[in-house]
Length: 148
Length: 211
Image 1 (cartoon, one colour):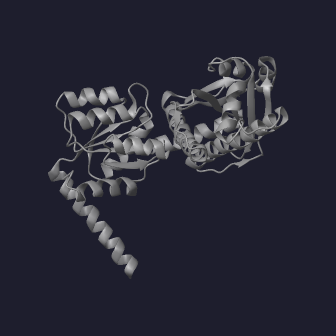
Image 2 (cartoon, each protein chain N blue to C red; image 1 turned 30 degrees about the vertical axis):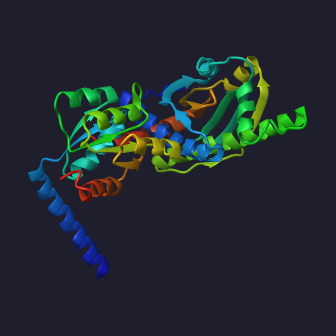
Image 3 (cartoon, rainbow over the protein chains, first blue to last red; image 1 turned 45 degrees about the vertical axis):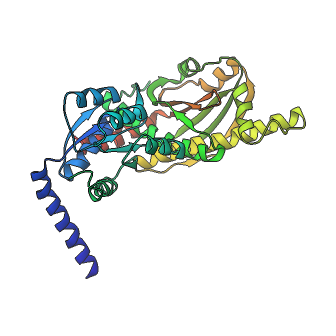
């Protein structure tokens, strides 16, 4: 009985989120050098009601933001060729202070996670990211009123 | 003679991402053990003939003098051999991270310590990396105990160790670097031809779910 109530509540929450996202125009920028990683994240975010754009490097992400594109949230890999994730994160924090960045990384060393926090990440999710983990990170941003 | 297995760019991308996650886990375990940050490079995946494997690998190393090699076999659907390759001087630096060689009392102690550290580091990196890649592909692997070969291991001996007759295997390759120590090494996994075919099928199932 309790489990059924929990499932029903979960379904209602997702139904509500789906309707809500249609009105709120939720958009995410996915930054990862791996196409498969971007497709995985796109699939999860689509299920959560997000429209997505993709960038295959930190440089491409910054160039896209410089055009005036403003996503609700950025999902950023750390280990990428070029300027890499930390420098990208620092540039976003410096130039777009209100834009929350969720770091999605395979580099789970405490040194690296501390660097990401210091550079301004709003949340950190370990790869391979699951839908529940992404949802939880978005909920934490929503509770902090950093995303609608 | 069997036909060489080809991987499409998106299949290689998926394998690279698997290696990235696998090595990320391995690096975190090593980083905790030695309290130093391990800088991860973007992994490279290739299909390489065993006959030319050594030259492909050696071209990646900064210092082409003496080597220390750890090799570890793994079995399961994802079967093959993992190798950790560091230069002789870097094997000594690794031993230093674990408390030597400053405390050593003789040359024999130094050699024993280096072998022991290489055994541990090789076991940690290869085991964690292979285990995670297999897990991502929905499988498990069993690893044999690692073997430490050298140091010093000459280039000719290394080539004879790596190059074997037979078909092409998948090579997962990652260069790692310890920040603040100016020290790096190479971790690579070589699968059998049969494992490469199985991996390709498993990766294709994953990709189908994304497109």
